[in-house]
Image (tube, rainbow, N blue to C red; front, side, top):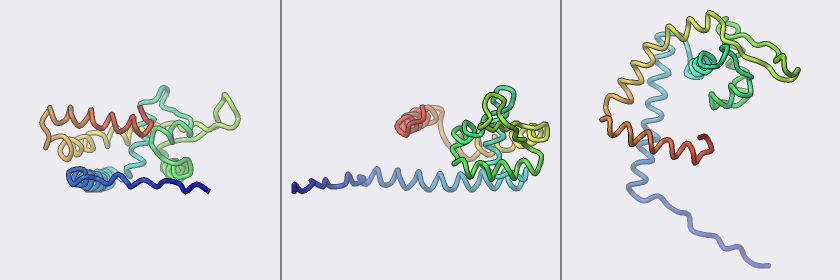
Amino acid sequence: MVAERVSEPRWLTAPEQRVWRAYLDVSRLLDERLGRQLTEDNGLSSPEYEILVQLSEAPERMLRMSELAQRAVNSRSRLTHTVGRMEQRGLVRREPCPDDGRGVLCLLTEEGLAAIVDAAPGHVEEVRTSFFDPLTQAEVQALGEALTKIRTQLGRP
């Protein structure tokens, strides 16, 4: 039997470790702040807001549940639960896909559209204040390029 060669992990350098931990801190703090703003001002969770955004930008304000899960970066089961809660509040509606009996469409209702129209200005202001205002235009551009590379590496062009 030939022993497999185990390679040493590629440990992070001290500068990489600082960047990684800063990213973790910022992402958690930003998620918490943006989620709190949406909940306090509009009674929406961050996943609910993202679903409303995706549906509001989709043709005819509807998407197959499978596509919505992919766009909202959500598991299908978690999406199903979130959409169920939103459906009870009248923000969305589900109906069978007319093209195939197995698919389910999620449609944005007029109430859902009103909710996103109401929530968007405050949410955008919080994003601007918390994320973009501390950065120069050059930093925004560099960060955008870096995040695009990482997103592509993760399989999401």
